[in-house]
Length: 70
Image (cartoon, rainbow, N blue to C red; front, side, top):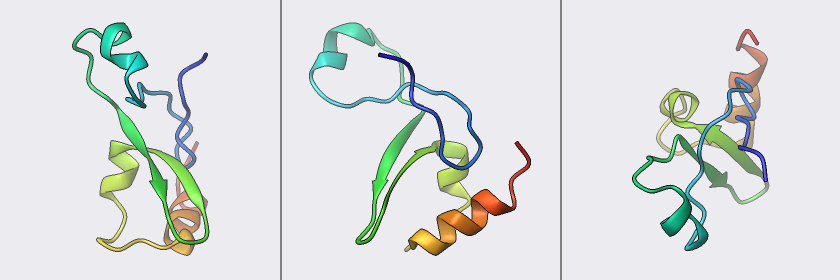
């Protein structure tokens, strides 16, 4: 399984997803998370996540992606 890619900036990062990572990650930190909204789901690195408002919508994520140089 490959590393996930941020839906905004396309960077790859480690994602802590459950007990399988308890043994595999061995002290590595997660570099992002899956943001589940009411109408959409996004995989985001922490850098992009920090650029969103405190209560983001799918439109906020899409707008951020539209204004990010890849």
